[in-house]
Length: 286
Image 1: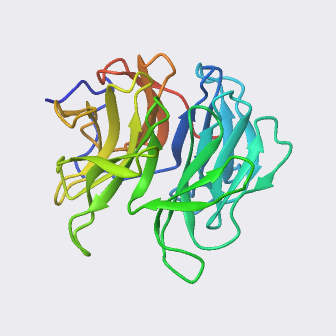
Image 2: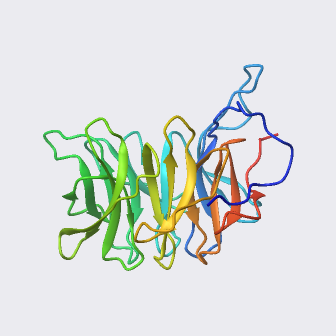
């Protein structure tokens, strides 16, 4: 089942897949969205008059402000909306939403996709390589940087709102890409469930809805662009939300809206949970 696209000028079939503003995370208090913005080049080869880094913006599109300059990816909010955890050059950091108190959490390996536990005490992340310091896979660390430990193999971890389970993605073969979602119970230390969801060649970036009943994710069918999808938490009722390319997204605290990257222009847009009523959030800098 496909959902509505925004109305407007018809796009060319061979439009480029663009990602300029990505990895949005909606604060639990609903007041701000943090995302990574990449400085872009126009058709004349001129750089845009801005800078790459983490930005904050209010959900109505106002009060855009720079949080941190640099290649700072995959931001995620603390439950109290006071901190943002993110990846920079393969390590995990956290910073206050006002830009103060930068704190480095990891110091070795290649670490990505941090996600804060619902109770605020732990952060999970993906370690992409195995070396003398530890195995690749999903790790847990206390939010103060202590007691780092490996928990299971996978990538793109995200917490269930119950604070007991983490969902991640595994591959079906060494060269088969990321395909299946697995759910891990941190208290029982076992993989509870494998969701046999193989919509396309790659399934990535899962995000539970605030009530835990839905999972937002991106999938790339063979030979096509990544699209944004949503499904029930058991893997059923898969619904495609975008048709012309979609990238990473996140839920509003109410669960009624989704912020995401529209690949037609590479900017952030907001739509409702059913894929309708699109509204552009970020724009080309002037």
